[in-house]
Length: 623
Image (cartoon, rainbow, N blue to C red; front, side, top):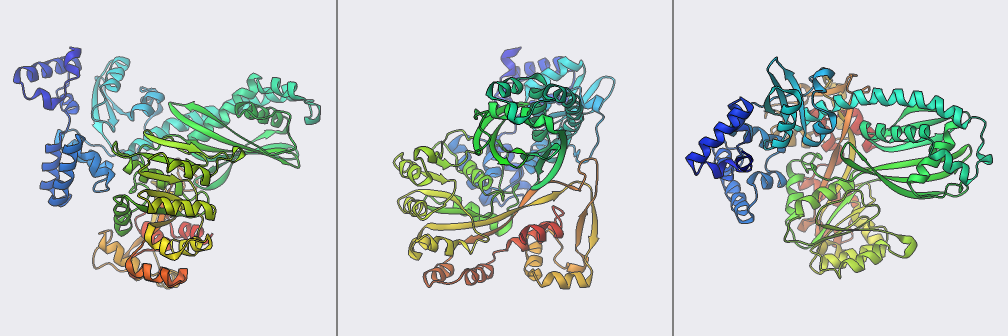
């Protein structure tokens, strides 16, 4: 029977005898005829015909992508998604329709823990599968993958029921997996409370001054300390934190997590826990245990539920001891898309157009923590094809990508962005990513690389896309070099995303008038109509906005973040302005005439979509 498991449906249908046998085997094994459809794979021709018939994408575009998919021998859907012509969830719905598989929307649906636990959390997370309905004879499971035989087989053996697979979207799956996490959070809270009392007894009576390196090493290896630190790390991963702050106070230690850009108090531990926790983290990061007078930096990695997460550690002497901050770096870039990051409309088209260039520069700008690196990694993921060589120089390497040569900056041994970039261009790359342009030397090398047949991706710290021009001029880059190399500039911020539970409201005339003083509402309304977000006849007074509501999912009504962007394309008119030495304001005015939405305008657009709030946009853009 195993011989037939590995046949794909399109191969089997060429032989009626084999196909009949295949149907009989699977029907006998799973006792569910519809399950056969679930294992059938949508081929390129089926997908192409359906998309053309449905009018989802213009016929010419589909034909062009289909030819490329056939030439590269890859699935048509992969290219359609990577080029932003269709979303992953829309592709999944299309596949479900073609195969005749039920599609379920489970967003906001609460599943009993007993039912959810029929599939162990590691299996659910690894295979993106979750149970949501059970009868006496069958178990309905939501999935993202239409061809995951191993997960189905495992669950059938475990529960002893017929398995009825149902396709769902990524947001529904994320919500189901989040319910596992909530049960774990409660468990972690119990561990912390229990082990902190043990730790207090272990460390009671000891002072920082009395602890030498041997004492600290022993304390760091003590079981309560190990458990508490493991709990802190896992708790942060589950909450989706980007940073962990461990701050010693006069009589206690405060643990704070940065979640969706905002710091939240996570827990308070007794002061006696400080030495052990810091010592344990130093052991993990290979730092000097007895050095408390000078700052130290290190790094370590853990595996949590099959997800590899790196922690970048920084310790700093403060009045009451050592403050420790850990940045969480999730090492998988899979699943990121430009659409999922918040790009849309004209801006999305401009970015995709720039990715098709083989020379020039794509720059992302914004403050620290604005998602610049994630945007570049997403673009790299689109560009990462077998026929190109990609090299990067980064500080730090935030995500590990297959088939990409990534180099970590090490200034202490002379490996800087500039020296690393010099070496990279001798490695015959097609595409180069420079983590950050910090000085004139790096900027000059990046521009020269773009002039000599490379596509260069990098980041800058500026407040807007138009402000990038003066910044490069300050680094002594000649105007004619800027206009010759820069293809597109993306300025961005991250705003908190509303959770599923939110309240609809409408702006009053006074609020609309006040908003018009800072936002070009006419341009925003035109963009909303062009992208069919609102009806062609809509006016602001009848367009809904949303407020956050507290829920079990989120205490403040927000969950996750989404980007707001402005995408400036180097047009002939903007080239002329840069050559003439125009100010950033003059460049921005011209870019807006050519259809660019500012970050503030893009934020209002996303507020109408129900992704965020006006208050959140104004908070972030005014920072």
